[in-house]
Image 1 (tube, rainbow, N blue to C red):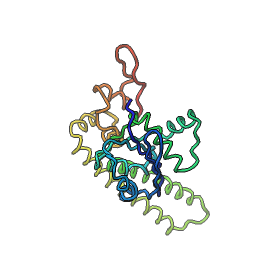
Image 2 (tube, helix red, strand yellow; image 1 turned 30 degrees about the vertical axis):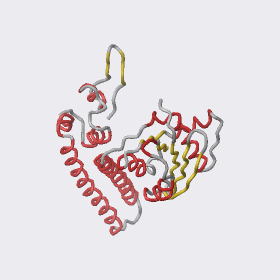
Image 3 (cartoon, rainbow, N blue to C red; image 1 turned 180 degrees about the horizontal axis):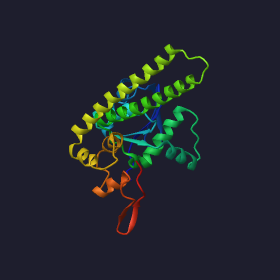
Image 4 (cartoon, rainbow, N blue to C red; image 1 turned 135 degrees about the vertical axis):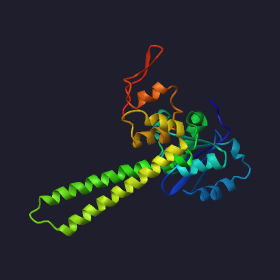
Length: 257
């Protein structure tokens, strides 16, 4: 486990970044907006004597708010970046009897955790196709939810003593529009998967019961077959085989589609 000479702890919110530069003894704090430009103008450029290629940038996983900065630092700048589960840092805080009540204190805590455990959470940026696939899958899921909600509204209207056909038609028109968009997005997703994962797509298409959504999850969100050692592992994941056995020991339980 590597101990870095300096760690930049970054507490990320939707609008702001709280930054703490830590050398194992003392902290230097900064506050700025949550943009790449602001981060470099208000922090990096002010610390002129530091070789940031030898510094660890430590962040918490905020869901989405940390991604743009973490990806830029890692992919565009080539810096060392780690993104930890916030529950782990919270546990670290409790074990060390430290209470972070402000963003500034949170940044210090993140930096101190990264100084000791940063290598456990090294960040590898996803490529652009990962985000395209993820957004398309999410859009299809959201649109199906909207269709279900609108269909329930139509069903409720049917039980009223009076039906306004104009309103009903408006609901139905929205449903049709969502269905058209779903078809359009699914077509785009199918083309993207076919072109990026040629052989993997063919293999998954040959497995009965594996549709476009599951194919997108495996190929796009799980990085193709990179996380599977054998073909049997893939079929087990999608639920075709009851379990995976290796050297007489169950490695994984039944997969679910």
